[in-house]
Image 1 (cartoon, rainbow, N blue to C red):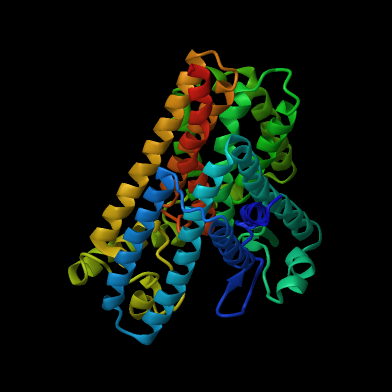
Image 2 (cartoon, rainbow, N blue to C red):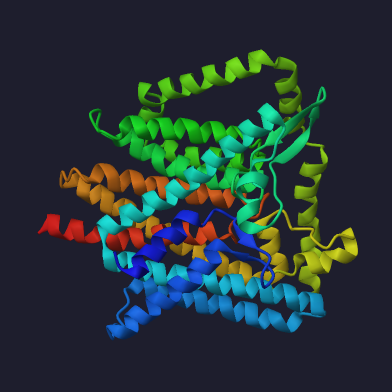
Length: 441
């Protein structure tokens, strides 16, 4: 395997492992290090082969990179303090790494083709599943012993401190929310919606005798249980929106034994847990369905900040990554986040940056529409591979809708994993259209 490919796979597998980072140069994560090496290797390989060819989707992605970069550079002139400049610089470094990785990866995946695409997708989903499995171990250790698995596994590697999230106490017992290898239970939960929604339609279309069918359904059941264990309302909102997208093309399968039997198994497992400690789980459930709690108020209150900023800097906002700096004077906290991607978008990049992201999202949905059209065309030609392409396209569509919906009350679109997810969205039509062309010929 070429070094570039190896670095790509390792980066994709570990992209959600936010806890694997070091306090060097601010905050240096494992994925940042791998990305830097990958970009250098990618550039060197292209120069060595005098290869300057790029597919059209790569060029369009690069054009979006330039457009976002211009917005952030113009927003630089709205910075007013040294702290604001520091935050802008941190945000800019992350943006450059993540978006350049997106551009290079789209080029790489399209060049490598269909088999490479599927392998990369399984590696990406496998990395999220591996993080979730660590979350299961983390939760098990915390519940059984009250110990902190992170201190034994991660601290020797990173030298930093981290632990499972403690939501509260019921009858003297801690309520734990696993955050796995991510930085927050909500981050884990929103990331889990991607493998859940991508794998679900593929599972529903797998032949009965397929050797991986049982493995996929067991993985889906495990990921769903972990999703529920995070107690994340934002992620459940996103998951519901994603399932509504799948409801139309897969309405029969969603109501069939293929899904109902595994769901019944999960339900029985959860009922047994609840029966063992009914008061404990009832108290936790009641706390999560309340709408007047502090968490809900915070998620809603940040939207009221938008008009104040737009009156001062309507076009380009306060500057990239500067929400916490501006609102420190209001909240008294230096680490107060916007709790919504769309609040951050409007506050930090203004109306121009928000409109640009809207165009970018439109482009992603357009690419997914093309992928679904390729799947339908393959199906009309009786190509057996259509049973994978079309479900994948619908799964990616549902996952994109889910992420956009969940980010109304949380902030994960700026995270690295979303850029990796976008790689598969943008590259899908270009990867599968050669099969359609060959089949039609």
